[in-house]
Amino acid sequence: MALVEVRELVKVFPAGESLLRRASGEVRAVDGVSLDIHAGETLGLVGESGSGKTTLGRLILRLVEPTSGAVLFDGRNVLAATAGEVRRMRREMQIIFQDPFGSLDPRMRVEAIITEPLVIHGEGDAAVRRTRARELIRAVGLDQSALARFPHEFSGGQRQRIGIARALALRPRFIVADEPVSALDVSVGGQIVNLLAQLQRDFGLTYLFISHSMPLVRYLATRIAVMYRGKLVEVGETAQVTTAPQHPYTRSLLAATPEIAFAAV
Image (cartoon, rainbow, N blue to C red):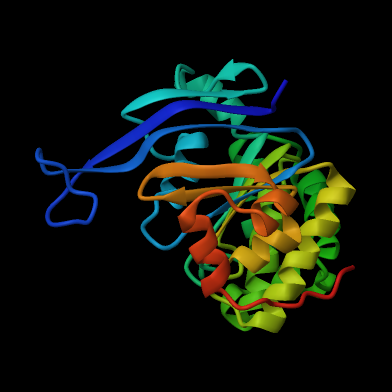
């Protein structure tokens, strides 16, 4: 059984002028999407800006409420869950945000940022949380001294490592990585991608990796799902999608994006 099951998911926003505008003045940001994400895999969700991929990721986590459809996590209906049930599910489903500059509270020290999810969920006392913060900061490749500092003291790549550590605090099983390297230069982004691959092996994680870069998802993903104008137009094994794409939009993405080399870890 899939860890995450998405069935006919729809999200409609009111809209002004838009490429996706309907006669009623609506944007169907996610338009009848169905897919499965299997435990331990990385499903790469790729498409250009405005294709609906970020909205889909947030719908799965119920950070955005859907218009219709269903999401199951480990057999549990996420969209029918009560507030308390969603809170408990949050321990197992986390997100890494795109912007490493805007996603960290500048008033909080790194230790407080990483341990905040533990505080919110009432996990452990101060000593347990401090130990967990030390473990995680090492796991993402930063020195323990970083815990006493503030976000503005770090580079973009270091901030993203801190955001990743925060996402891991509750020991989740599933992580939505929403364009986690798009705000970084190529070399730093490659380091973050390799870190995510290493953490997946170390912690047994399942990823939905959202990106506009076909070479990036080709490198990291087990399977690739291609999104265009709110719909999934192609889903398949990475080798199949990247060497024998079936949909014209997939072929255009492959043709338009230069290959990028990532040094494997």
